Amino acid sequence: MEVKKFQTETKRLLDLMINSIYTHKEIFIRELISNASDAIDKRHYLSLTSEAYHNAGEYEILIDTNFDDRTITITDNGIGMTYDEVVNNLGTIAKSGSKEFIKQLSEEQNKGEVDIIGQFGVGFYSAFMVSDKVVVETRNALSDKGYRFTSDGLEEYSIEEIEKPLIGTKIIVYLRDNSEEENYDKYLEEYEIKRLVRKYSDYIRYPIRMNITNSEPILDSEGKPTGNYSEVTELQTLNSMIPIWKKNKSEVSEEELNEFYKSKFNDYENPIINVFTSVEGNVTYNAICYIPSHAPYDLYSDTYEKGLQLYTKGVFILDKCKELIPNY
Image (tube, rainbow, N blue to C red; front, side):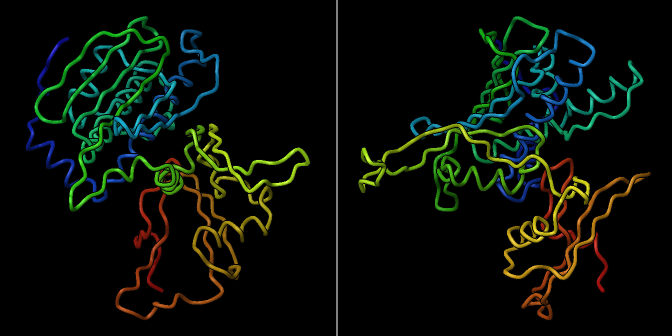
């Protein structure tokens, strides 16, 4: 095992980054899933020109929780990392592996920008808002060696070589002990993971899956309920993957648009109208705007907040972005 100190950063810088950039601890789920999506994007992109990156199975992101160990594990079958990439991307805070990837492609291959989310490095360290240890196990697509990165997010980290049969990256987050201010156990609950995925990562393009346990009625020989129940665990996809505003309007019915509005904004009435917008140029974006059939109850109060929900690369960023809509 090799122990290293972070290259140019200190505990003070880590504390400043974690406590200043992110205002909600739950955001770590969004960041780690976004990193996993980036890694899959990279592998898929490179697989178009090299068999070495080919993925025989389906691209996916898996989430697993362990109540006994109090861990959350996020696994992807993306490109993985080499030893040098572990040191450069994880050992240097605020270094973006995704930006380096785009830069390399544009310089060496004269390719256009790859549609990845990324700030791998900064986003990764958001995990230390909720944990006292993070373990990363990774294997690059071009290597037969795997590596384990372990850190408590303070001043040093360790790297060791491991056996890892599958290509990709596994991040294991060891949650902090509960305190009076924060209940970290909630991140182990299925419903909380599902809520956070739907809130922040519902439109990640790859399936985000987790084993979900449900109670199902036990039937008698005639197919009638006996009054007893059994627990059934199955792997479920938590995200819908395709945002409705990315579809062609001709592909979406008025009923689907109305149902999306009512479920998204907790309204019981259909909107008066919806407006699809697609812009390409120096600034490129897709949008769908709804005009409600009634004014918000607090429209004229001091506490009213206006704004549109903002997503970037399918990831939920801001709930009320007031800069996107004029006061009138």
